[in-house]
Length: 476
Image (cartoon, rainbow, N blue to C red):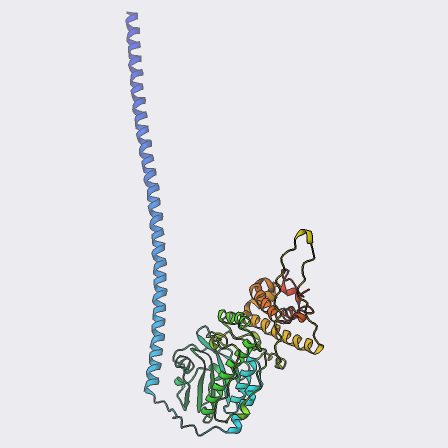
């Protein structure tokens, strides 16, 4: 009986153990399922967060697009308003009768005045002096005068007479309806009396005089780099002003040709400066004096004759003034005028010394010293001075040309002390031209090209040329 009771107890314990195992298995299975569900919920939460971030990014992009669209709409409205203003102005101008004075036939210009005008223009030598003389002559017939220079598609006042020093500082003419821009497009002068305000040039705070104004283009073949404006409280002698403008253009062209000619040059010598002029978009500031005027023997009502130059293949628009005329610092309003160039005395140009090719090396048994270069013949002190003056003028011309074409680089080079590295190409090319032109006796005694580089570009401070500058070069 006792054994039977123990067996029963053992059997019950085994049954309990089996039940506990089943319960443990069920709990493990339930826990695994729960963990799996938690993992699934965590993945769903992460995906939801990613979707939220994506939607937030899209919302930000839509808001930015909406802002950009609002800016574009506002700009379009502003432009539309400006177009309406321009259209209204055009309608008012068209509806308002403009009192224009028909120009009567030319009755003849005072011969004494014309003779004095020709003498004045023939006596000046540089481009700056020519335009200054032009303004002085024009101010005899007008109360106020302005020279507008082309810059980046607009026109800005460059030199003036009859205005205060700062009256035109903020004036920029770029409105297509402005008479200045109209003259630039048509290349025809405009003269009006008692015109309404809408039909007058915009001169900013300076305003304009009430009775008459004229705008005359200074045409250089296919472009108009300068426009002359004059106004007055009375009628203008527009015939004289037009003739004066034509004469100024002729003198400027002749001056540019004289600079290129530089006396009598061979075509080979004249070719490099022509190529340089074509490649650069700036005016030439000549340092060669103009030829003696021949105007006294010319009838007063005829145009002055232009002296012939030795390089007929040169085209004037490529050497005179370009369409986008950059204004040099030294020529802006209020600056001191550049000193006039020394008078040019026309003398026969010395024959260039031909280069002597070295002889072939001698054979070893008969070794002899290599032949030296052809000796330079001695010249008189008079010729030495003449050739020296010519070399100085030519060096001054070349360096001034570099400065005119590279105003910004010259300014920056002075500030950083590296003029030569910034302008190396132009300086080396000009030096090559100088060495071809200068007389050998001068090249062996002085380097005027170096002196002008230091004087004009570096303002007498040779250190501003920079560490790479070779310094003066004197032939041996």
